[in-house]
Image 1: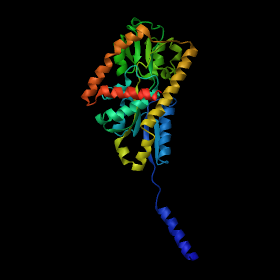
Image 2: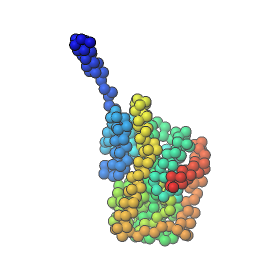
Image 3: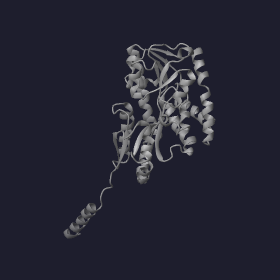
Image 4: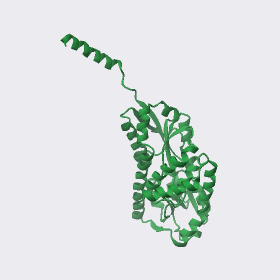
Length: 339
């Protein structure tokens, strides 16, 4: 081949490269209402965002911005396109979600990992068809670690010790549990927990150990009553605007799915389990007295909240879901994952 021919071919190659632009990067705006230093922000949202960028080879970037609305508004913010992606808590809009409560029922799991992975599998097998997240793309869901009962001044030794205590709750199933146990439910945002407890506005709180630690409540907690399997586990999720999802290439959808779903449940659970350990260590170091509910106290707690499962099964039936089978599957998965 002559030097002239080689030069012509090289010139054509350069022209083709210039004329063919690289695929444009898709930037998705993630509205985050959680404090930026909280592990939910750093170890769940932040890590997932990096995983998305890596999986899509930089074609999709998650731009995390300060909240574009109040925490309970985030489902609709994403549905209506105000935000492209968001993290939310199912109980903050409890009327919208009935099936997710199944993963929050008492006494199911000693950690977040087994419950969260089992939850995603239960969702795919039983709940997905009911489409409670209609209008958005569900990216992933999970539950935090087991919640316990923490009090300022009063140690809980019998079921009667709970009577009329004012306990901070998050709504949803935590309110139902509070009423069943005879306490007075007090609603306050999680970041306000230290304020309401330190001022004596609330006598105690239902929380996982992680939240006592990360919301700086440790100094005002004298007593911790651990509930085997957890008093509840809060169901949480990440969603994406449906139009934004539909606009992605099939390749990028597959890439995002590869780091979402069960992988995201496992990622989130790793944070919760690590932070629960740190929380308990911090409380013990500060002098918090820990006891574990057992004997008559545990029997009384189970008796008081036992009706919640049956009530949920009836609600699930109205959504076309066999709740009893779903919970049996949930228990089986948790047991297998706990080995």
